[in-house]
Image (cartoon, rainbow, N blue to C red; front, side, top):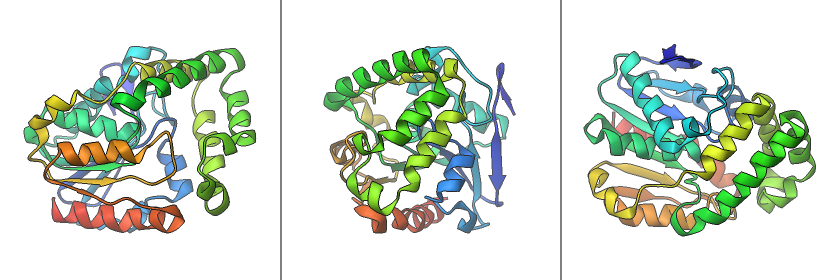
Length: 267
């Protein structure tokens, strides 16, 4: 479907109250399915599961404007997608960048969001600037070597950014990261990194707007790009939230059940 002048790849399954899901940065529907993190095929038919490739990701249209990748703009895409599908109220969820997208969507239209699923929330507030510096460096590297060469570098240097348990127990994450990069044009990838570098979660004082929304927060350990500290702060700011810190492969394998149970209970 189209949102403005951008074509989005959208996948729908089930029939019932809607759950809109946004993937993580450089990920996409195909790679998410290949990784099998969320076991979407086992999601109940009683829920209308809606997933989409974010702008510039997967087979959605490429985008070379950094501003379009700010988390606030990605939230506009989620809300416009809901409008285009005739959805008034929904549970919003996502992983990493997608979790930030869901938060901003709820901030913009809190009466439309009946629940939030925030998986591996990214760096934010005091941890964000160092991460932003890394994204700006990645943007320069993407422009210099291109997305294909960057994917090869990810394969070769995965030990520098993946937790030890991921390398030993879930090595498919390495190829998943590379596949996500290969699905993007070099121009889109450079813009994505720049947009991520300009993004942060809302000021903590703004969270009163969504304090009433039931929220499930699922971080995992030993990942500096998705620190538990962000999840714990979100839990403090959202009094109607549940925080479950997952560890290792067993924790990752618990994601699908926890997400399904929460969504069924709040749709």
